Amino acid sequence: MKSKYFITSLLLSSFGFAHAVQPVRPNILFIVGDDMGYGDVGFHKCIDIPTPNLDALAASGVQFTSGYVSGPYCSPSRAGLLTGRYQERFGHEFNPTGNQGLPLTETTIADRLKAAGYVTGLVGKWHLGAQPAMHPQQRGFDEFFGFLGGSHSYFNLTGILRGTEQVNELDYTTDAFGREAVSFIDRHQTKPWFLYLAFNAVHTPMNATDDRLAKFPNIQDPQRRTYDAMMLAMDEAIGKVRAKLVEAGLDKNTLVIFISDNGGPTMKGVTVNGSSNLPLRGSKRTTLEGGIRVPYVVSWPGQIKPGIYHLPAIQLDLTATALAVAGVKVNPAMKLDGVNLLPYLSGKNSGAPHKALYWRFGQQMAIRQGDFKLVRYDGNADTNSGVRQPVSATKLYNLHEDIGETRDLADVMPEKVKELQTLWDAWNATLAKPLWGEGSGDSDGAEPGAPRKLRNKKK
Image (tube, rainbow, N blue to C red; front, side, top):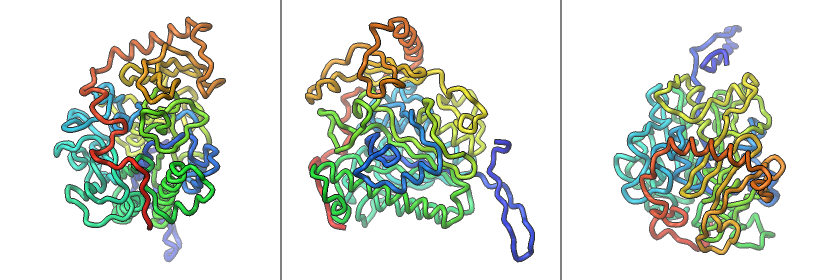
């Protein structure tokens, strides 16, 4: 871009001439789904869940076929997104509980954008610490509506906060979060804003409204039917948010990103939600593609040409991209791992955004360089027994030819294994030790006492 700001002009028809207004920095909207299956959106060829609003968002921007998150679990992935850094660099490798959370030494994107003059808001799930010093409004967010933990009932208002105060009314969290996002946009039209809309859909507990369940009479599996209804609710909420952008005349001055925080939980031993990661193999909590490759869209009408991008990118890049769009100068002291994607999407930079992408999750690991991926993963992905298994042997896959990770090439390409392992070892040597253990949270990061059974309610 020739300018760091998106400059608009206003046609004053009553005077018959164009009058240039002051430069207006773009708004930034991060939308994050929770535990979504890779195959559960229309733009990834899902056939049983209508997602017209997500599909329209994808059509308006760039769809990343190799879009990743830096962790296969809720909180670590979010820690990476909000800092733009591999979360293992500061010990946030697993889900926190109790006094644990995003280290206070880390600076969030909300901190940086607020310092740059943006109004900042969080609607939805936090999951980065419940202690007062870790509250969203102590981490750069001017406004907060949502819950602090890792999971929440969709109907129970206990624990739903506005700022630090308990709310008094709640119908269905997905609908409420959509309305709150619309309200935030409506109230902040004179200054640039950053909104982090973090749905708890479609994380357990499996709660759906009866009117939406009725739209899936042919889905026999009750869990999948509830999941479909929950996905529909999120799609409808996203549609209302995008409609507000158009109504307010902000759609062409707003960078919108959409990702899931990790893959769908499809493996026994993890609280499953009825999602599908096909054609990928693996689940949430694994370093197989099904745990870390996610729906990933970047849209900015008039600034980013719609299309499909095939080279690997990671959610850390979204942070760096947003800072660049806002005109925030990135310097080495920030120690960001993400890169600004705009030059790659414009064609100015023809190479890959990263030489390689890396993952560590306890004893699991992965590295992707080009088409090749070296991985060690939770062995329960092979047995699906629900019993914790040893981590697999090191395996090598060519993802271009084998997206389902079914043909191990380690024995026939030992030099490639050695090359990738050497790169991963060098990266791993730069990381911190985990600040807390893998077993500190339960299997899905749910709040204590969160219901596990299907629960639906009339709307």
